[in-house]
Amino acid sequence: MTDPQNPFAAWMGHMQDMAKAMNPALENFTPTGFEKLWPTMPPEVMETFMGKGVSPEGLDAKTKMLLTLAGLTVLGAQAEAQVRMTIRQAVAQGATKQEIAETIGLMGLFGGLPAMNKAMELANEVLEDSK
Image (cartoon, one colour):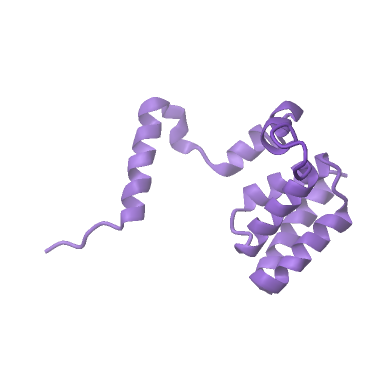
């Protein structure tokens, strides 16, 4: 009798095979590589997906970026590339260092101190690089 393959590992293997079949260069794709390729969204893309174009009475892009940062932080800041990209995009939308720190700090109450500390480290990396 053999052990069944982990369903997540099977799915990931299938998706990697599919990506390689469509474009062999995708075999080595990583979120970090994408982060270097596209560190922030172009303004037109940002407006389409995060702006007020769809809902003029809705949240502005900066608030949406801070909410995204909060969600990534409360989940443990495990998606490092996404945290860094979100911080860069929040800054591009006018978020201050104080607003970013408060957003991350508040999530320490919900996601725990390790999550908050990790997100703060990533934020410091991004904000120092932008000087």
